[in-house]
Length: 220
Image (cartoon, rainbow, N blue to C red; front, side, top):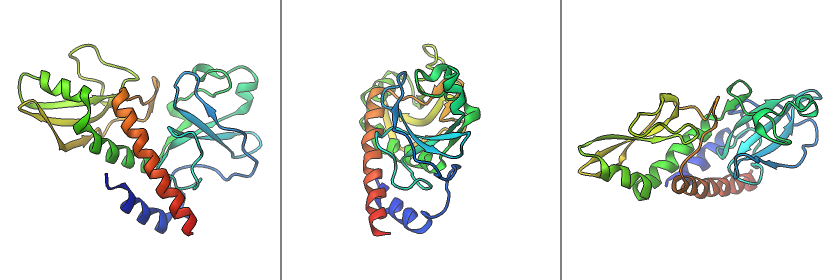
């Protein structure tokens, strides 16, 4: 996975720019939270004003070192703390605001890293290998978003197709990896979900990305 060199270049040259929507951290943030309904999804708080708060969402348990430039941050969730005080947390669970498309801003840098990591691990994924071998003919298979799994034999909704891969003679061609152009990190069904094998590979890749972020931060 060629994350380190490209990421180091980007961090060094544009780390002072805001690469995804967030507000300034004027107040001291509270502690990070783990989603009770999505183990491994973390909410890292950053207060944007007296009336509204933002969480940086991540699959890593610690906040990113660069609040305005972090390829390891999934995106920004804005919410009103008054909603939690009034018991309007919704589907987020106790103490966690509801995650909806209207209050979530995707981090395009994360999406780029997501696909870079997945492209590097799809060739060794047992689940995808089984799907490829079960095909009766050459063609494309999809990496589905498991937040809304399709019925057996059905093609997922375009917003739930993370990527597509070409299968030839029952073998996946990792070089054919094609990101799903319509895929959304968050829909009305919630945050994206991968199967266990791909999620493990994603977390390991994000940990490497975070190390690069921290190294570059120490050089600035």
